[in-house]
Every structure is written in C-alpha cells, then in structure tokens.
Image (cartoon, rainbow over all chains, first blue to last red; front, top):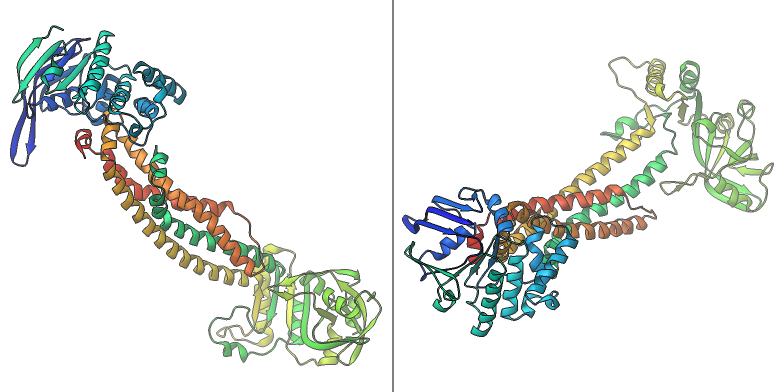
Length: 227
Length: 396
C-alpha cells in the first residue's frame, strides 16, 4: 500500500470564518495505480493534492505514505519527503525561467546532494526518456508548451519517486499536445509508476484507471474506470 | 544559482553594490595611503637612533604654551660637562651646536651650509660613518683643530670630481682642512641629511662664540636601560639647575618615540574619521542591498515555491539568497579594493612615495563587504526561507 489516508480533515482559518476544506476523508492508493481526483473548484481537490504532495499537513487525521506517517512532520522533513518520494507536474509547468532544460531537470538532485557529474548524466537520461535530449541547453522560453511540460515530467521523474502528482497537467495545452502528455503519463504508468492526476475535466479523468470524485470536501464517488 | 540571478540583473546588481564599492574604496584608499606613509615615516624616524636621547631646550612635540618653553634657559657647556661626568648609563655623549655659514672652495661659494660643532662621539650618537678619510678624533676635539668632516652633498657641490681629502675650505672666516667625507644618508622628510659640515666642538665655540644654546645627545648600548638613563639625566640636570622638587623640568629630553607617537596619534585620528565615513557608506550600501534583496525575494516568490516543492529546505533557500547578497556585496568589495589601491597609490605618488598591495587591506576590504552582505542579506533570505510552498506556487 502506497498511500493510506484516515479520517483526514483540513480546516482553514480565514479571518473569523472556519472553512472545512476536507472532511474526514478515508482513502487508500496502491502502488502502480493511475488515479484521477475530480471535482469542481472548491471541492477540496487542491487541498487534498497539497496534502498528498506533502506541501501541507492535515488538521486532523493521518496520512501514511510508504509506511511512514507524514501527518506531523516539520517543514524541512516534508521537503525531504517531497524531494525523494514525489514528482510534481503542474498546470503552469513551473520551470525556472532563467535555467535551461537540463538544469531544471537536475534541480531536485541538487537538493539531495548528488554530485554534479552524476546529476548531469541522470538529467540527460530522463530528458532522453521524454524525447527532449537534444533540447537540453534550451531555456523554457525557447520551448513549446508541450516541450515545457515534458521537461517538467522529466524533472518529476529524476529522483525515481514513489508517486507522480500531476495537477491539471494538460490545462495550459492545446488538445493535441495534451493528448501527447496524457500518452506519456500512460506510458509511465505502464512502466510501473504510480500517478495521481488532479483535474476538473471529465475527458481527462476518463483516461485514468480509477476516478475519485470530490464535492464539498468529501469523497462522493470512488470507482474503477476501464480503459 | 546565485550567480545566475545576478548576471541576469547586471545593471541592478552593479547599482546595488555601488554603496559598498564607495565605502570599501574610501577605506582602502586611506589604508593604502597610510601604510605607504607609515613605511616612509618609520623608515625616516629610524634615522634617529631609538636609543639616543637628546637633551634640549625645546621638546620636539610641544603641547600647550610655547612661551613657557621660550623663556627657558639654554643648555650650557657646564651642563654638558655635568652629564659627561655623572651620566654613567650613557655610553656615548656628544655636545652639538649648530649654525648656518658661508662655505667656499676656490671659486665655488655656498651660503647657509649647516655647520655642526661636536665631538668624536657624534659618529655613535648620530650613527654616521666616514666613506673616505676619517671622522673627528679626540685629539682633533681636544686641540680645537681646524679640521672638518663633510656630508656627501656638500662634498659633491664643493669638489665635484676632485678628491677632497687634505684640501682646505673656508667656513665663515676661517680655513679648515677636510679630513673625511660621510656616507650618504639620504633625505629626512624631504630635507637632505648630507648637506652639512662637522667641525670640532671647541673650534666651533672659539670661532663662532660659546654663548649659544646647544643640545646634548646621549646614547646607551643597553636599550633596556634607556628609561633609567633618562631618569639619571633628569636628576643630573635638576641638580645642576637647582630645580626644587615642586617645580617641573625646564629642559626637554627628546627621543625618537615622541615623534613616532605623535605620528601615530595623527594617523589614528585620520583612521577614525575615514572609518566613520567608510562605515556610513557601507551602512547605506547595506541598506541598498537589503532593499534590492527584498525586491528580489518578492519577484522570485514563485521560483522559491518551485524550489521548495521539489525538495529545497529552509537552509537551501536561506543560503541561496544569502549567498546572492554576499556575492553582490563582494563584487563591490573587490572593485573597491582595486580602486582603493589605485587611489592610495595616486595620493602617495603625489608625495613621491610608493606602496605595495598589502594582505591586510585586501582582508579588510573582503571582511567589510562580506560582513555587510551577510547582515543585509540575512533578513530577506530568512523571509524567503520561511515562505509557504503552496502560497508561493500560487503567487503571480
């Protein structure tokens, strides 16, 4: 079991108002699953993603990732977990604009102290995997949207994470390029990676093997999807 | 990483570091100048032997009322004799009287050549040695002979290429035989130390009068007894002059370290002023760096979010921004060291002095700029390190 979430609640304090973004969520995800988290805005899917991604901690309940309880870790401990266990793919790519593709991809390795030469080698290998080896020295501004997202995927893969967390990965792409990205994610899942994809688009969710639907901070439906 | 950010904001980084540059330049300029001056001044002062003291009417460094000193009695021959008799710690004692005189040889005439009347001990107390010929002897002095020893410059002026030894020159109204020429001593604060003539003390007094004031130079070879010697001299003179215990000395015992300490107090005041000025520009520079770093942190909130999301911890972010501030500041420091060195050299060359690159000034330049970088960069870097990754990623 990769992820076990028990009675997870997240409450935000906005001035004097308490917002219950997640309400007693229970959820388990196995290794090599391909899960879509669906829901309209305000449903709590971003909050759930932040907690699963160790960017945030729950107010109540437990989150166990890879047999480790990560519900009450410090900022720096969470940073280490993110570095080792999670690869992020964002809607807006979130590459460093001044760094070239290679440098962007090797960035996570810098933060776990991998030596420079090995870093270079590994970064080139993952860029190869997403078909961008020959663009290694290009900056994000010199790449198309699809290429940028592939660089971001390469960055997410470089530490060989337990989990790839994709937040609306096709949201800023045209449908053809979006299709390419979805194919890459599918291939990665076939190769053994666990992928959680957050989206509000039905046709994207339909490409995943399991769809979890959220509304008002609760899971309203959790179903397998045959593809 | 820090470098990348700086290169992409070349102009901004440069303007930011300007304050540091000016501060470090100021400090290094003065530092270099003072080091050059020190080298020169201490070199010059070492011409006055450290263990020679001079008994004189006036102190070298006058504090307060000049008239108090003006009304003092001259040092007399009798007092000199008392010192010779009772000052047991001194190894060499020479009386010294001075007067500018007309000097001529054949058709070459010079006005106002400095003539010193002294004894054979002068070669020790003033640390001079003959280059050719010999110095005064006890016999020359006792017999009040008409002989003279010339400084190098006087020799060159009077004799040009001729051998001066044994030649007779006219000093004032009398003729003297040249018995020796002294080694070249160079300049003392721009004043030639080779442009004088030495004659026996008694001869001088007989010819030019014995009433004039003199000074007495005393040298001890036992450096550790220098203070003791000064006390002994003081005791002898007070006794001879019958100074009651309540009165203060009406003579001065002068020594090289009086000039050294005067010089030191002058330069340390200058130092203090410059450090305040330099310090203010470094402070302003530091504020500039802090300001621009805060802007930089705000501009790069999203970058901070990305870095945190992929695993950067607080320390990583803190050191990235701190390093950036230090690099900006150090660039100003390095440029300041270079400019300051050229500035100092330019000032020194106006005074015909030279200077070297000193490790101390480089360390000072680096030290100041790095410290300012750390102090100014810390708050912005700390702020960056504390940003929440979620909020930062959402930042537009």
